[in-house]
Each structure stands twice: as C-alpha cells, then as structure tokens.
Length: 211
Image (tube, helix red, strand yellow):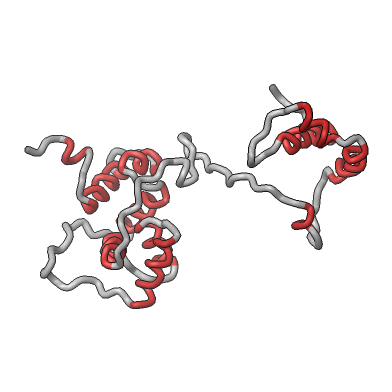
C-alpha cells in the first residue's frame, strides 16, 4: 500500500528527479539541501534545473523492453561514457560533460548505456567525498609531501621569501632532530617538523596567530 513516502522517498530514478526538481522550484530549497535529501551532488541538481528550464528534461517513465525506439548513442559517446564512469563520475556529471561538448543526451540515457556496459550504480557519496562541507563550502585537496628534488628548475614568486634566509640556521642547530626527539605531534600527511616550521614561518613574517 502506497503512502506519503512514495513522494518523499521515491525509489524510481525518473520520479526521484521529478521530486528533486519540485523541491528546487516549488519549495525553493537550495541545491545543496535538495542534493543531500535525494542523494545527488549539488552540481547534478543544477544540471537538472538547466535541463528543465531548457526543455530537455523528460518526465515520462522509462520505456519498457520492446517498447518504442530509444535514443541512439554513437560509439564515440559510448566510449566517453565508459571512460568517465571508470573515473567514478555519476550519470548526471557525465551528461553534463557531454552537454558541454555539444552532445544532447539525457541522464536516463547515460544510465541505460552504463547498465548495458555492465557498470553498477555508484554508492551514495557523502558530502566529504564530493568535496563539500555541511555548509556548502568546498573541501580543499589533501596535503601532499613535497621534496626539494621536485623543486629543481622551478621558479616561484613569494612576498615573504626573506623567511628562507633562516634556513641555514635550522640546519646549523639541527632543528629537525630536536623536534623529533621532543616527540611533538604529527601525522603521515603533515609530520611534526612541518607543523613546527609552519608556526615558525608565521613568526618570522610577523603574521598574528589567533587562539
């Protein structure tokens, strides 16, 4: 027996997109809120809005097997869809990329091609995985270690380059060894030496540290 959850928690993808658009246009919810409720990314919600306002959105239920003819996908488009899914892009994101290349294709068609190519649906991604915090701010990329050898031949512009004049003193007084022996906190991404040097750099360039 159907109840209100048929509308609030739709299980069919075509209806899910309809309810997401309704929440966006009628209830005037922000893209981030709609995305979180229906398991989409905010970018995908904006794509749905664009497709709807430009008349490219199809509200009809999927055509059953043996029904009317379906949109023919070229071999080149099919290859791109495969390549992008291997990079873990969603059907909505793939449709958006194809649209930017001038290929007019619906999200439902992309989903059909992915199913035909043997790809399973992507698990629901958390906000952190799609690069957004709860308040919608972008999550910065993870820090990576950089070694002097990687910098050879490169040039950088820095307003506080004078701080590097203290580098010989760090080596002279073996600051790195002192930090390690002191057991200061650190992790695999940002070791204790890097933490200490970042604070030292703020002091050297006269930047006020709050807290």
